[in-house]
Picture 1 (cartoon, rainbow, N blue to C red):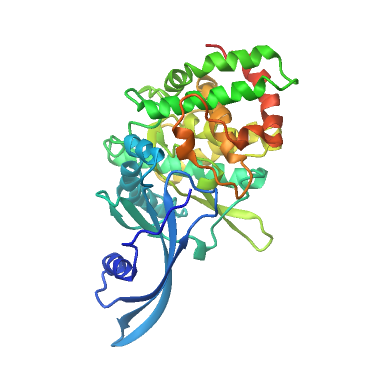
Picture 2 (spheres, rainbow, N blue to C red):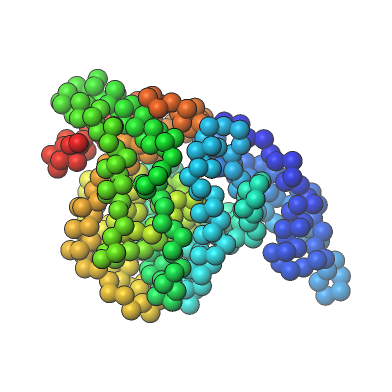
Length: 409
């Protein structure tokens, strides 16, 4: 899907943003270059641009030249997917998180001598053209991991620790301001959801049913169950994600998969820190929701099979440490409680495998046009469903899900 550079994204605009962000009216921007911020096929629900430019400012009584880059994220226009995004109100959520909530969480994290949880927001605009301007994390060494191969154990451990810190910071924020997360009450699975999304989910699950009917490794019964499941997948998702006041709750990232986690590496090319991006689907709920989605979409299958409990224990330990460092008075749930909640909400991992994992596994560089998929309520198939790596995962997990009753209507 080709997205043209907005006409308003020019030197004059960048100068205005930079002057306001740095409170410096002497800034003069020139030599602006605008390029896509992500590779082809790596971004789906928005258009992202990396804007590189030179600028002058008065410092010490003389003009000083500098260079800088920023990221500008805008809504998609003119597609059915744009209509879906607008109905989901995902940009309103992201702008609220980036401009209000995340800065407060970063402040909590900083006071606990912990790294930032997200990039700095330089400017945001709700009215059209809806967009947000954030710092470019690339100069700080942050980069995407290899989506197609998935995250190995070292990457997963770094990411899950950061998730625990993210959740802990939201708890600390809630203790200071009980209404801090009040607006984040939607998420994908909610009452009065747009039919566009419900039909999209149904179509994805039908696609899996069609594909699995040809997999000789599976009993035909499983394909039949998946087809029946497609009619109620949204309702079961709502049941699994349901907010419960008596549970330990946090701000969920809501879309925690490999492309929304940037890593920084040491001299041995080992990941040492991570940071999250893309806060369009944040909502308050059980931390199990983020954990299940992450496990369902991002690790290599070896990590899922061999190191699942290690990841869960690492999350729990990191959560407890972070909440202590952030002076939280809320009681940390026991590891047994966490396991119980994960079991109750396990269907969220099933949905992640059926709907999101095929997108994760699409061949690098492929142009996945979600706007075309969103047009159809009955057929949402794309190349990810037909990849060998995806089949290997699903042939293993579907019988397991079936044995646990997770494919039952």
